[in-house]
Figure 1 (cartoon, helix red, strand yellow):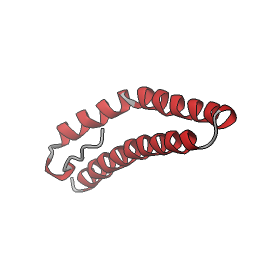
Figure 2 (figure 1 turned 180 degrees about the vertical axis):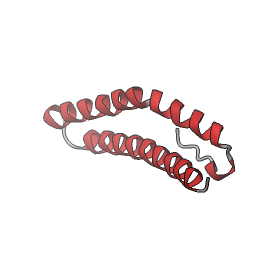
Figure 3 (figure 1 turned 60 degrees about the horizontal axis):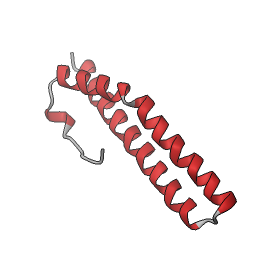
Figure 4 (figure 1 turned 90 degrees about the vertical axis):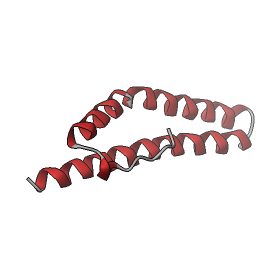
Length: 84
């Protein structure tokens, strides 16, 4: 999930396929982030804040990684569409 691809070297069809793949992973990403947030809330109310900070950091990392990938792909697609 942390691998970065150079989207400028991909064809438009590859970019659209990559965007479709990321959109299909949207629900799974939301479930994982939600799980981390739920466990973090439980840990904060029952165990303390050490584990909470770690879990919130993981949730933030996963969510921001997904968002950056999607924005990067969409920016490259729109850049190519305006060049036509």
